[in-house]
Amino acid sequence: MATSLPPDVAPPSAVTVHRITATTHGRFLVAPAESPGPAPILVGFHGYGEHAERHLKQLDRIPGSGGWIRVAVQALHRHYSKSRRHVVGSWMTRQDRAYAIADNIATAVVRRAVRRDYATAPPPVYCGFSQGVAMAYRAALRAGHPCRGVIAVAGDVPPELQTDPDADWPPVLIGRGRLDTWYTQEKLDADLSFLRRTRAQAESLVLDSGHEWTDEFRAAAGRFLAELL
Image (tube, rainbow, N blue to C red; front, top):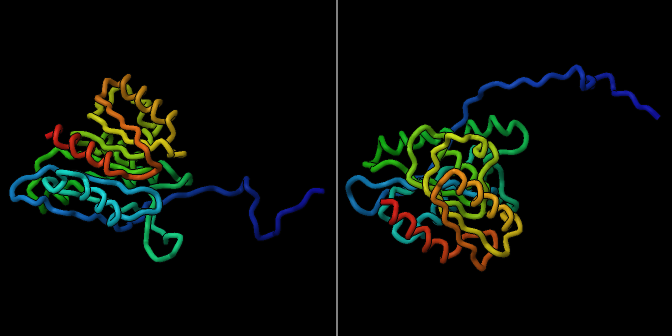
């Protein structure tokens, strides 16, 4: 039996979608290098449902990171945690995904602000966890400035970056936990295959862990950062 729409609901064929540019305030945390003088920049992107404070703590636990200016960027799409005790964020949803990516990718603004207030030694290294990995890759390729390297923990290369044959990929360190059901071995293999086709230096570690940071990976990240200097 056919049903009709209520009189106050327009039929789908009459609905059009409109978008406007709206101003919002981004947020990022900066931990200065432990020694005076120009220092390299390590910029991090947290995972889904996390916040910049949590990610900064992870950056701080990487051996040798005290010699870097650590920057943790907060995702623009903020919401409450499941416990409603914390304000957390995500980088995008399926709705208007490309627009959200463009808004979040304005890391050049963050970099300019850091360089204005701190003595820096560019170019930066980008680091991401889970959903933030895609943002780290995007920043490395799309932020409009050179990049020393990418540290990717439990996340994959976003599809739109795999269609640019002229992209200049920096060295990449990837970490995956054997028990991780989201960033699977198949995804890791696909990422490594793609990165090797681009002739990028790609190193990976598979750890006895789940979807998480580990001390073993932090140690590898510390060595990776030291080699980039």
